[in-house]
Image (cartoon, rainbow, N blue to C red; front, side, top):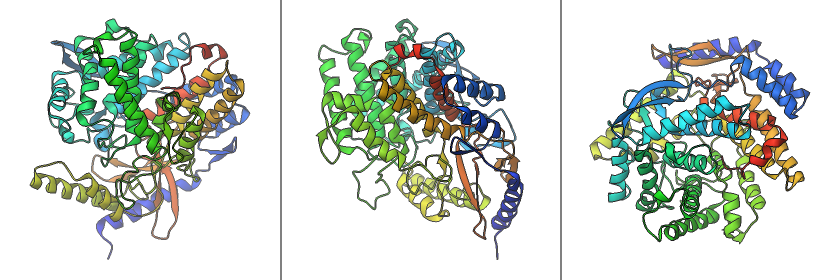
Length: 558
């Protein structure tokens, strides 16, 4: 006899599939687009002029809106500092829709990636993207305030003193909206790459003249000074981190990439005197250089895999992973080539282009042919088929309750390996979620490389631009249309069918399968994902930028 959850879900899926029958994707530039008008514009061409028209349409329809929330203030250096944040999704668009923690928590990574995107647009064309520059600067200042509160700096100091600790003891990179000072437990996977991304962004902004050193408050500088001793204390480069997907902890190539690029930037900016306050002794540059070398050699050994150090049947073992895009975004091919680090199985030094090819081969193996989006990794059970149904969510809640009870009984952290293994085993097998933000990340990276190479190697610049346009078009194809429907969680804790907001960038595309085996792919409930919107906005803007912007382009680090 069907359970009550199963009965509800049958009705849910029947309604979702019935309402979705009217939806038809439109062909454009060899890709199936959710929106007809967008498909026609993309089909017309990909010159900067054509892309400016695409940008204008998306701006007019609100597709590129990045909601910035005035979140109040936190105390830094004894004074109240106003903070503005980018939430994970548009939590104000429909207050009746619940997005789990995304409705109640601030994610530093999403915010930092959005801030970086706005900075890149401004630096590509300071006149055209002056507003984006103001937003980017405001978001960077706010992120610095949030990571530099007394409670946060105390966590940095404690880890430096005691070495690697549990998830809760790390600086908090996901903050409850009612605890932006980070004074309370957040029960989150804090051991990841977020504060490192912020530190890199700040140093990159200073190096490229977007921020002045006089904008850094004493506590901001203290945060930045903690980076090197903190990474040394936790065992860089071979400590275990939950990484960008905030799941199981493993030794992750993607995290090493962000941290190695950050350490290299620290080394350069202290040696040239631009950020001399980071140094804690005359041999500081040598010590940091040794860490950079260790990071590069570890990354070179592991390419193109994310966490290859574990047995093949271990939940921690991972080959291709979409977060490996950070190797490209943070300029690791150039660093590895310059240092002549042996790469992968051939164990030989490679040119930057060769490293890019190896990494891209791994990344492109994750493209979902049905949607054009990226699965995060093979076998990913998060938002897999029927994830957003009453039955599957009951299973997920039971798993969370079980691992939390076990952690409380042991007096330790939640067993993330067990949680991941149970979710993969107990939830329905089938199509993984296909994510949109890697498309924008690759498009923006390709655009930056194209701008950088335009003067020195026009042929390579053309190839990078073609790559970027291809991924831009794939992302544009996911922008929602007028006749799409999906299931969302409302205040009664039940799933309900809702018309998808048109002209929005979904977090990912998810699959539903009924008891007859019929499948339907729809935008996830978390539409739009603001991080994805920022990636699309940047990629489109950079590709629409006139040739004059090439002079200011850096080698591709975002």
